[in-house]
Length: 285
Length: 147
Image (cartoon, rainbow over all chains, first blue to last red; front, side):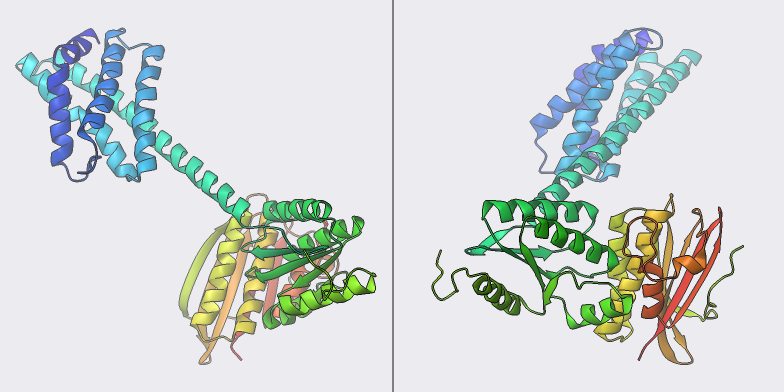
């Protein structure tokens, strides 16, 4: 569709101006007052140039030139996804190009003709296609963002702290799912080796519910620690959890459990002195 | 059809109903949290709320592990003879439970679990009903009356 491409390149600056104007007038569109006018103009210009090249590239437009349009749309869309725009605002930004370009074309053609209708239909179809690209790019960016955040949370949530010579404390906070359980085991075993610890205290006060799945993960962790010659004391099982675990008939006899972290620490000291290690009164850091 | 176990409590007009699509572990966590909250909202003590949340967790975990396309959990709260009662149903169109009597035994597990999911859940609730058809799916309905 050469004529579309020609019109766009001839009226490039006018199209960009009226596009920006339109976006500023439309409250639902993808421009907030805080958005930098210069950045917006650069973004829109790059997108429009790619689109113009696409229309100039042949009757149907080549796939290569559409890829360039899609990549510009993706850049605009990803930036908006990160900046907290809504999907609707982002879609509106691209869709609002339709009326802007239509107006220019109709002014040029100076009346209804079948050629004009065909040109407009082609414009609409192309912009719709770009809108779909924009939408998936938006979602993709958000998903990557969520994934990054949850990974960051995961790293944050499981510290293994050497609280005394030979004693490592790992407070568990949050949901213990399969991925988290694997990480807990990995980090605990790593800390046990690094600190040459004999005892690990796993505090589960911050785990919302201990069901059989969590119990299974705990059992495996305890077993793995035992293979390294370390004992695990599980603390922070609430009275509610204890009653529920008994009804579930979960077998936790393989691990030492204490109600509170304080009681767990006491037990850890007792085990240390029973092992002939330095008692807490003499042990230091 | 495998012989069903237990019978469902007849439907009462629910005070509230929440629906959860269970596909992955994160969905289990969400249903579990909601279960605890619904119990709390209707005046259940924390120990009952904890037990109810655990029951939901066990069954929802089964949906993730055994029903290939997951399933749906409904949490409900209703007044039964004037007494607050919470319950849940879990439905899936997974492979069904081939031997229900065996699956209800303590310590029986096909995937290396602890084998206390179904029997344990039954002990945590007041009414417990399972219907399952091989190749067609499973429906589990439980309820718990406020003490």
